[in-house]
Image (tube, rainbow, N blue to C red):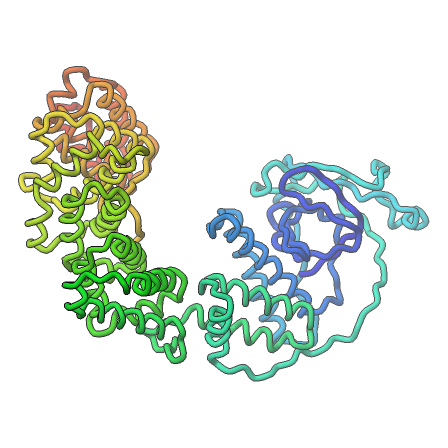
Length: 617
């Protein structure tokens, strides 16, 4: 529904809108509080306004209503884009309301194209008449109002502008105060223009895809930015030129269909795609480089600039193009282009080109879980481990290599057995040695942090403790002070540095996994100093207290405390033992079915650690 302002309103209260007389709004929610309604203005700003300062426009045009709603939707998207593309909880709620309102208006429009929307204004529930919500401010007195008794506002209003605070809790049950009923307000006739039917020109089905391709070619913008720009432009044209609103709607619909289409379902065509053609050319040229054994033996450098351009363009396209187009090219011939790229990396020894190849591999890992699996099954990881140990003084390449290796291992998927010929105890020792004693060139100490992440990712692949290479090497070292300190810092931050992608199935938390493995053996549990152990116990108690039944992380923290309680090292100091018992007893008494996995762990704790508490199933 469309509303207009009867008076000017100013307020410094967060969440409210300031407006001038005559400003127009789209109602989003009038049910949460009868005195304060949530609206969107013509600029897309969303906020609360006093209900008695606005009135419904009875003769509004449906196209204007749709345009106002779309403008508000665009504003929310733009705000999120400017902050990294992440929507806040409030923005998501606002978007949902706007979209639902737009669908309602369009439904009414299809039922009666030339009739105004018949939806009634929000009604005030009688059951909400006895609360303690702040009332809306009374409307100001105007000279024209004093001539008509029926239009007089309450005598308490004496100022032309009013500042008032909205209710403190707009989501709780609103009230209606008898002394703040909305008074009849004067209406002002406005010139109206005849309603023009929007045009309904036919639009080719592929127009959205063609437009995205055209803008991408001519601007170099990413696929995502092209989509945002086109939606904004056509929405603005529809709003500004009502006579072409119908055509603009069809174009916007075509853009939406393109965004939802994929090559696999046959709804997205690769024909004429610049990105598809360039990817095919680049992969073909890089395959030729791989096959040119003469060039490899001569080690000529005349082609370095050309290959660099290809690799830089490859990374740019993989990052900016429609992901479905990239995946369609990569999937062909059983991932042949991936295999060629990996083999070329093996054969190319120039550092500058290897760095560019590593960037491309990093983008590929984030493109699709199937591509990551394909790379993990190739010899790439083995080559990275070999090269890191052979050329540890090339700091930039060492950093890039460790980062890509962590990406490959982050999924926790089983490794080909032959990989362990290179990913062996010697490799783990190399990582731990550089964590404790980084290369002299590493003045900013990037290597320890990167190598800690790589150790965490590698440890995900060992389910059998007796075959765990990481634990075997740690047990021999007896002490790894920097490694243990960095693990504790990461645990305290509650962020798993190995969780780089949201692919399914998700692996266990790498930090809790390695801590469980460390405290599963007396040979490794001594790696942590007493103070570190005490801090860890504090963190575990906090996590067990704060997390709810069914939370997978709570189950993992219970497994960790189970491992710790089995070790003699804890019982030497018994840090916060009473608090820990109370926390475990609370979980043991939970009635929720989701608590069952946690209670199974508690049964083992009670049996093995001689904890005396009752577990309710």
